[in-house]
Image (cartoon, rainbow, N blue to C red; front, side):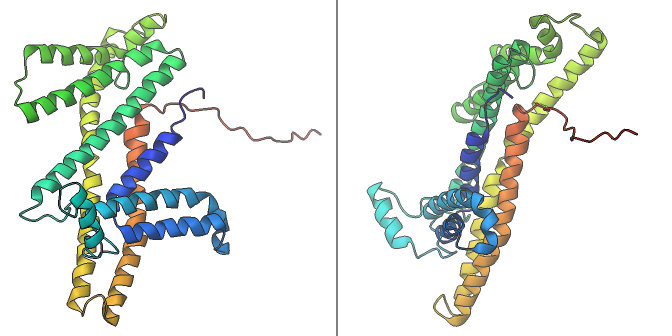
Length: 320
């Protein structure tokens, strides 16, 4: 519809989020292998799935990278130690680089990882807002680009609040009257979003349904922008939660394998294969659903408002 195509951005975000939540070198390579087989058409029964081959390869590579950082290979936490330690030595650190299994020594790293996922959410939410502003300018809807919860007013409020929260957390900054004034000005643009849009775009009357209705609508918009941006940001904590859940499942498989004789024993091999198969099938599907949910609710909700044209099928009209 003459606006920015979000699919390239979705491809990047989907691949990144899936890899963060599903980090395992062995399981990631399984996805890569599935993608290659689909691309080559080896599995005739799934010939119609050939178009999904790049997606499997993409999420497989992302999962492999995350798995290397986390030190997991088919839920085993020691197979990659030699290679990982050699790489870590080049950077003067220890391996694995990430410690998602919480313990007394690494709980602070888990905390930082959750902050990292919030940062990813901030980037995705901000990208959606920028896309919306550019789209509205392209469509010559200057009022919608400047005002409203997903326009420039709402975006500036969101960015300022995040910057303020960082300053408070890192530098112990005390909120000043100027901060309240800036946030109030941004919220004022949201509160008066609809009449200001009509004013800028030359539509009259400015208060289409009266001053009282505009005031009620403005209050609802302000409440919605505060609650929605807060929930949109916290929603990305699920990325860290699923990454932690994946690490815990891997730890359970690894522990069960050790308890019944180790990875070299027949029973250990059976548990390892069955456990990893369950994780790949079940958790892979759950993670994919969660990533799609984040794309739909947090990213697309910022800019996707087009409704298109109603589909009217062709029909023959019979006359007597």
